[in-house]
Length: 181
Length: 188
Ligand SMILES: [Zn+2]
Image (tube, rainbow over all chains, first blue to last red; front, top):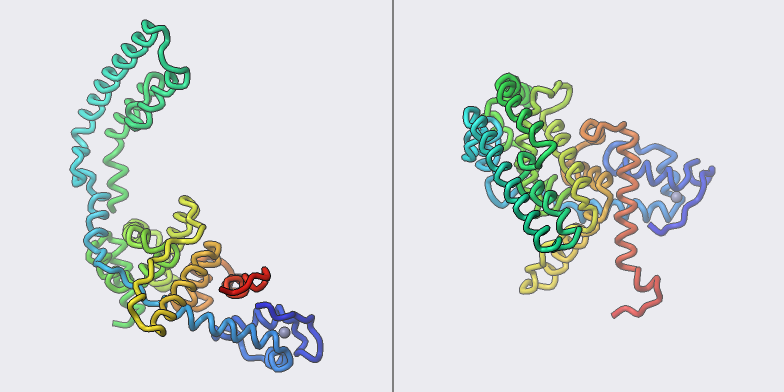
């Protein structure tokens, strides 16, 4: 809309071009009455008439985008997603209630093994005269944290995480019950 | 059954966690919600978004207070989901536009497809908040009161935001068509 604007005045319905265009936009949507000031402004102002034509043409150009159904039925995916969230056991990851304790134990064993591996690697590094850059050495624990997820973040937070896992096992039933309604 | 009664029945069943009610809801409103997600997020993200929206619908039905139509509330859940996703993934730049398959067609059809792509591109170039009002008004056909309810903003803000979004779209189009001339370049 490059059309020049004018301030409000008696010759243009007492409306500024900015107000006239704002009102015309809502009028095109059937959300603003076709008032005398607006009619008078549009009759007197070529710029605003062109602006209204532009907005009208824009609506017509947007119309073909209105109907856009998905190419396939999305319901099976939605139903499966709801079921997975309601019953974590159906994820097929062995994440049902009882095995959670076993998973915690497995995490403990996994961490112990990883710690052993890390210690061995660090020992090898030391024996090899500190092979690898400082960045590589400090990256190891970070990488383990990223790949293994929360349960494998080592040392200081491991014990806390294990306790949290066990607390979730104890408190989980109540929490899920309220969600399930 | 009257639309309001149908809404009330569906909402009550959704609140009870009835998966059948969610399916009815999807069959009734899924295509429109897909259209909304498609225009807000782009084709590649639309189907995932629809799935996530309907999961939220059944999980959040208990929080639906009534006072608006079910379709309005569904739009609210969907728009909020899209805006959050846009914020998270910073998909604010121009979305991928499907390549035109119209090269075999006649000149007129080619122009129509080209125009559709142009307007899609212009729409995807709007800021998410402006895109949302245009999509809700021009594509979903909601009135100002419904848009105000969906976006939780006053009706006056709907009016001004919509006007600004239209102005922006028209400016973009003008830049596209008149840009080279404005820069003094010869048309090719
Ligand atoms: Zn004017």
